[in-house]
Image (cartoon, rainbow, N blue to C red; front, top):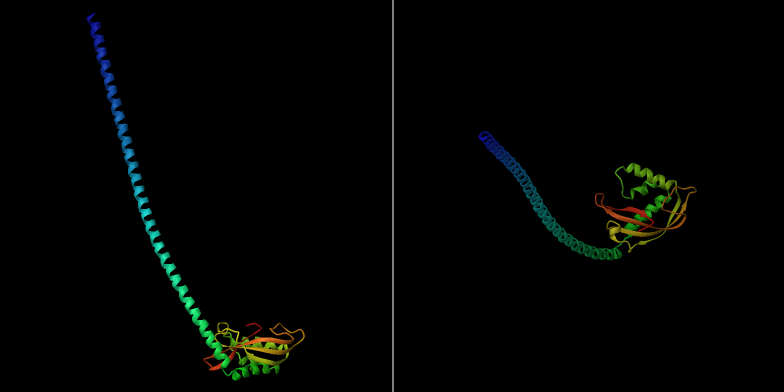
Length: 229
């Protein structure tokens, strides 16, 4: 009987000891799990903090960029306003100068300039194309090619050309003619049959001889012959 009681007591003690050890192991596992979770959470929190700091820095840079752009925009608006005011002032000065120039044109002796136009018409009428070309300003560097094109155009188009009238064109602004002189000219033109295209038609033609001064050659010359101002 005593042996049975002793065995039961030992069995109970052993059971309690095993249960206690199990509880201790379980507690340690939970502690380790919690520590691991806390460690992982700390890493995530640090990572989030770094991202937040990065976003704060980017946000700060963007705010600075926006501030710089606002300053630039303000400066550009101011410069634009100043440029517009300067442009208006220059435009007013040019209009005033054009009025003065047009007035001087009306009062100047244009006989020598009219003589150039008349000579040009006479040269075309008498097929002296090179002489007529010499009264003009060369428009390209390769003047030989331009001369050939000039001669070909008039030789294959114009049979005769007579001057009917010439007068100073006061309606042509200097901005349209390099600050030069424009003559309104009426020509009586007879074209060849099947002639190549030119600005002239058979019969009376109103054309504009635009003239300007050539400083290098120290002379007045024809800059353009056109059907329009």
